[in-house]
Image (tube, rainbow, N blue to C red; front, side):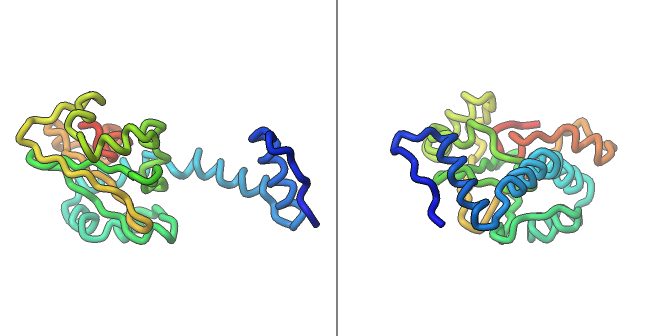
Length: 196
């Protein structure tokens, strides 16, 4: 069976409909797949997952060490999943002397099941190029001014490695519960473009 031919000037919607029709004709269920993916995005792939991870690392030094040595195994301890092709999750710990920030210079890869889907600015060529070349200036423009002596390390995702920034724990949070701590953690903090 041949898929219907479309004029070269077919709209994106027409092209999408033609692809779905071709898949349907071959017994695939694209509408079911799309609905399943939309549910995962809205209900499972949330920054709150990473916030729980960070709060646990702040509260439990043994867990923090496990997260820093094998991020993928540590997230599994919390019942969180990662796609098979995300073979490694590297947790990058911010300190007063070192600030980490992540990017994907080729596209927009993140550990999306842990920190949520990337924000629009993360996908833009301007961010992807400038965070590598002029990270201090770009971070300042985004509202994060770091001391001149703070070393900035930029980490670029690869085909099988994803990163999460472990922000510095705010000093006024001694004695806070994990849910209270998790409420402080933002996706931008886990990318490294914000302090908490």
